[in-house]
Length: 297
Ligand code: GDP
Image 1 (tube, rainbow, N blue to C red):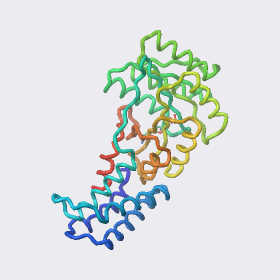
Image 2: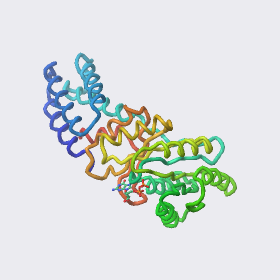
Image 3: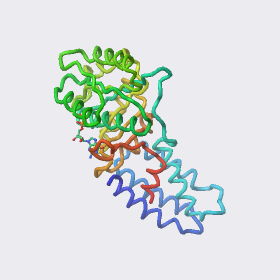
Image 4: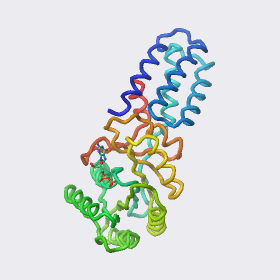
C-alpha cells in the first residue's frame, strides 16, 4: 500500500512526542529532523521538505497550548495540518460548465494510466453525479489506444467518439463537441495522445486542442510510482498547458508517496483524484486531510 514506509517512520517518530506533557525546543528539533529524513526518503521534493519543516518548526515552538491536548499531541496536530495543507487543503471538485457540455481534457505521458482513467472518470461521473459523458479518442498515433478506449466504452456501455487513426486530433475533438451537443451529453472527456517523454510536437498538439475546445478542466494523469519524475512531468505540463488539476494513478502500488506530497506545492494545482487499482470503479476523490491522517496514523 502507498506510503507504508513513510507512515511507519512518521508514526514511530511522533509516538515519541505524543505523550509528552512538556515539549522543549530540543524535542521539536529532534522530531522535525526525523520528519525531514522520512519525507526525503519518501522522495518528496527537497525544497518542499525544507519549506514544510520550517513552517512546522515555527508553529510548533511557541504556540498557544490548547487544554484538550497534551503539548506533544499539539505538535502532531501542527504536523498533520501542515501535511494536509501541503497536499492541497480542501478537496476540490470538478468544474461544471455554465452551458453543457463540460469539457475535460485528459493529458499525460504514455503508460501513466490516461486511457484507463478516462474510463474511470466517466464511470464516476455517471455513478455519483448522474452524468452522461461522451468519450473521445484523440490518440491517433497508437491504434491500440483507440481500441482500448472503445473496449472501456463497451464495458461501461458508454459511447466513444472516434474518427480512426487518419483524422487530425484537433478535428476529432472539435467534431466530438458538436456531437455531444447534438446528443445532449453533459460531459465530454477527451483522451489525448501520450508520449514516452515530453516533446514539443505533443505539447503543440495539446495546445491546439485546448485552444479549439476550450476545456473546463485539463487533468494531468501521472503515475505516482515514478516519484520525482512525476513532479517534473507535472511541472512541464503545467507550464505549457496551465492544467487545472492532477490525477495520481497507481496509489495502490508500492509508492513512496513523494509525488502526492510534492505536486501541489510545485505546481500549485490540486490533486483531484487518485487511482487505486486497475478496475473501473477504482478512482477516488483525493482528500488531503484523510491522506495526512493515514500517513500519521
Ligand atoms: P496510458 O498510456 O496513459 O493511456 O495508460 P493506460 O490507461 O493504458 O494504463 C497503463 C497501465 O496502468 C494499464 O495496465 C492500467 O491497467 C494500469 N493502471 C492505470 N491506473 C492504475 C491504477 O490506479 N492502479 C494500478 N494498479 N494500475 C493502473
